[in-house]
Each structure stands twice: as C-alpha cells, then as structure tokens.
Length: 338
Image (cartoon, rainbow, N blue to C red):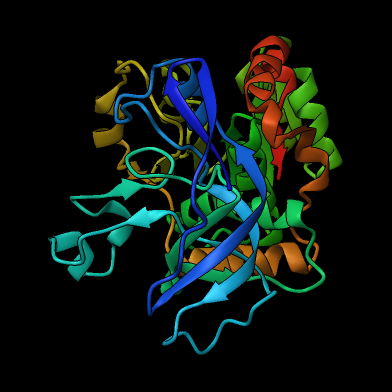
C-alpha cells in the first residue's frame, strides 16, 4: 500500500508498506478522503510545536471498513466511517473524569502518532463512528472539524435566542457559526476576508462584517441594536479579537477561546474581574461530539459543500500544500482523494 511520509517540513515522500492487519478489537479502514487543516499546514511549515519528523499526517478523514477483528461485533465490512484521532492514557485526572480530550498524555494521530495518509489504516473499534449510507465521503471527512465546533459551542451552555459574536470566518469559525445557528442563536461573524464572509453567507450565516471596512462597535449596533452580545467565540487566535471580545461583551458574558494563539496576547483582565466575565478554553472533542456532528450534517443543519475549496490526488499531496500557501485566505478546506 501507499504511505505519504512528511520526512521534513515541506517535503513528502511516498513509500510502499505492507497492508496492516487488525487486532482482535481493531478495524482495518480503507481511507477515502483526507481533509487538510490549519494544524497540518503548521506541520508543513515546520511551525507545529508538538510534532517531530518524519510524520504520517491525516486526522480528519472518511473511509470504508475493509476488515474487522474477531471481537468486533457492531461494525460491518463495507460501512462508511470516520474515527476519532486521540490516543489517551485513561489513567490521569482528566481521563478519569471523562475529559479524555485533554488527557495529560494526549497524542493525536497525524501529529504525535501516525495518521491516515496511507491506503489502509488500523484503529481501535471504539474510536470508529459509523456514518449514514447517504453521506458523501466529503461529508465524512468534515465530521472532525464540525466536532471541534460542536464541542466549543457546548462550552457556552444554552445559546438559543442569544446574541453571539464569532470572530473568524475560517473553516472552524464558519462551523461554529453554523452550529450556533442550528441551536437558535442570533450570530454575527466577523473576518478580514470578503471571500470567507461570502462563504459564510452561502452557508446560511447572513450577518457578517468585514473588520477592515466596518468598526466593530458599528457592526454590533447594526445587527444587535442596543441589546449588545452576551457570548463570543474567538476563532482567530490574535490579540485584537480577544481584546474586542473582553472589552465589548455584555457584563457577565461568556467568551470561548477556540483559536490557537501563536503569541501571548495582552488583554484587560481587569475587565474580566470587574465585569464578571467567564473565559472558557476548548480543545478538540469527544466521541459524542462526533455523533452530534453526524446528526447535524445528516439533517442539513451544517452545510459543508461551500467549505470544500479544492481536491487533490493522493500522489499530489505536496501540490495541495503549495496551493494552500498560494491561495492564502481564499482556501477553506482542501481534500486529498485516495
């Protein structure tokens, strides 16, 4: 079978490997589609702080079941599936209380462990999520990023009829907005890119603002009037957007930090204290978030089609990254086809 190995930043080599066999409680998957995410791009550039080389990438994907282990009873050969990519210890405090997504020894396939950038991949049957037969393989590959959004939105509690800001209209910000809308929130999504805001519009997020062209306060008043906003999702990872959230949110408001900060921001913690603001971090997802994401996509409450920017053949993996670098903000999700 083919296997794509990133041997160093910006350099992928293909090697032949033996088709693996599933263990007693494992499943052998035939990989169909792989999504490239922002963290993958950081690895490509050599800027991911927790990934060493060589590495087999790929953690958001769809597949069919090729073979199952002797003890696997509830997964059929030929089924469309995806799977969670976390490898956890099961023994630390977070794991024991059920928060294995923040395991003290967390490893993620595609970063600290081999990912799915190969024709066949073996995984634990307990991590497999069976997809509806009507799902496209593109939809299956988008369950992972949708699950990031589902997990993040759950941090804010009840969002129905709430005025909510989403900073950032990239793939994750877009999906956060769609999940919020599906739950009955009134959403304003902001970005610096008209292209991304247009994609948001195509996904049903009609309230948008380009921060280059409209002051944040003016956008708030235009969409929410005098009601202000009580919840914010920071999906960018820069000082300006987290500061805008802290300094403008309603007193007692909730801010969910989704974006990954490459530099430590300077923010007004005096406001956090004095206004009784609530700051939440969010990382990855749990199995049940995958199930919720599948349901939202299946029922048409998350539209992934406008998010797919381009497809590349497996053997053109490097070309996909060059395309992403060249297109910049005009890329949402690039899919690798196996």
